[in-house]
Image (cartoon, rainbow, N blue to C red; front, side, top):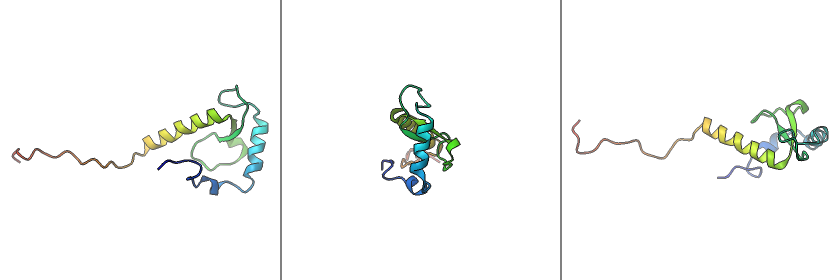
Length: 98
């Protein structure tokens, strides 16, 4: 199953004043703090996979940079905690003696 904002529980963990904080970050960081080219449109958590919503822990980012950063972080997280595989372990050949 694909993980995205619609399937995430992250929205439930956001503080009640998230729209206000998001706006403050975008107003503070007018330009994307990742590429320094495009305007900031997203409030990005600097440290991934955290629920620290303080303004110091957030940075303004443009949508393309935020998507790319999030994809890299998600891939690293998946690689660090691999899921069990459905592959069977190798078996000895039935004709071999024990």
